[in-house]
Length: 161
Image (tube, rainbow, N blue to C red; front, side, top):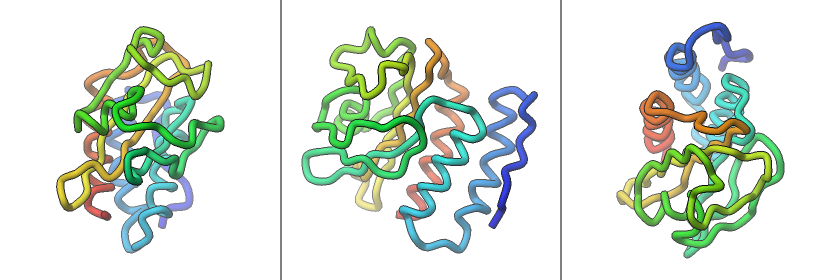
C-alpha cells in the first residue's frame, strides 16, 4: 500500500486523474473492506484536488446515509430524489452542477459549496448502492473531464461491492 500519493500538482486536471487512478487501484488492492477502501479513495481525491468536500452516501432503505468523507461536516441523511445526491440516485445518472444555487431543490449542507458533481455507484444487482459526491468552493469547477475520470473511480468502487 502506498503511503503517499505522487501527483504532479502543476499538471492539468486530466493528467492528475491519470496519475491518481493507478494509485487508487494499488491503494485498495488486496483490502477486502469496502468502508476502508472508500475512505481512502475519498481522502486521495480530496488530497489531489483540494475540493471542499468529497464523500459517499450509502443507500439505506428510502434514504441516503452519510458514509466516509473528507471536508466540513455534512448532511447525515438525504431523502430519495431530493437534492443533487437524491436525484443522482433516483435517476441513476451523473449530475454536474455549475451553480448549486440554481439547482432546484439543492440541499445546502455547506454554505461554502458553489458547484457539485454526483455520480451513482451501482451494486451487483444494477441498483444504486451509493453516490459519490464532490463539492467545490468554486463556480463551474467540474467538467466532462471530471465526469470521465470519476466514472472510472465509481467503476473501481463497484468492483469491490
